Structures are given as C-alpha cells and as structure tokens.
Length: 172
Image (cartoon, rainbow, N blue to C red; front, top):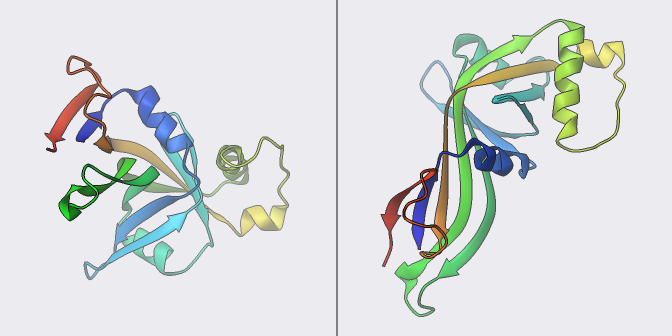
C-alpha cells in the first residue's frame, strides 16, 4: 500500500465534492485549537461556510482569520496480513485547504454564497427570508494552499510515471 500525493485539480475537487462535511480548524488567542464539523459549498477554489452570527468560532475568527479546512472520504479499514496488526491502516483520501476567512455582509452576496453551499446538498432552487439572511454569518475562504493525499492506495493502482501524483511512502 502506498501514500500518494495528488496534484490534479480535477481529482482534488472530486474528493471535495464527494464530501458532506468538512472540518474547520482555527486557533484562539491563547493558542488553543478549535475544530468544527461544518456544511460547506465549494466553487472556483473557494470554500463557502455559514454559521450563527456569534459564538466562540466568530470570536476566534475576529482575532485570527486563518483556518485549515479538511475533507476526508472513502475511509475503509484494509490490511496486508490479517494476523499482523502493523499491516492494518485506513484507506482514505483527504484534502487540506488553508486560507483566511472573509465574512460576507451584504444580503445579495450572502444569498449567492448560500446558493453555492446548497448546491452541495440539493439540486433544488431555494428562497431565503430577509430575517434568515440577516441572521446568518456567511464565510468565504479562498484557497491559499491545497494538498491532497490518498492513504493506503494499492501498490499497483498508479503508474510510477504519472506526473499528477507523487509517491510519498511505499509500505511493505
């Protein structure tokens, strides 16, 4: 089994779009980490999130807008030898994005971004009441860095000469 680093943006975006939830990590003023599972939308290398207009996460982001967003999919327990504990691992694919949160305050911008978010969960068209739009915090995170790793890939899954992947580690 191998750990593979992917650079093909279509592959990376397919991983993101196959997820229902992402995990958003931030760091508060005293250096304590805080991670939340969140619904999201994704378009043009930008992640869209929404939340209540106040609370711990908003307090943290008002002092430090940097976030790390993790997407993970296709987890499956695999092994090379059933009786050898160290040969077990989770086969999965993950994407990690870093960026800075920008809060969108105008109603038209919020609605546009909420539509992108809802596209991740439904093909329906949605309407939003003015009080609902006014009382939601909408976040935009433009990608600063993006990495994608596939863990536990079968050794014969990829050709060694594929330019869009890098073999990080080969397990025996």
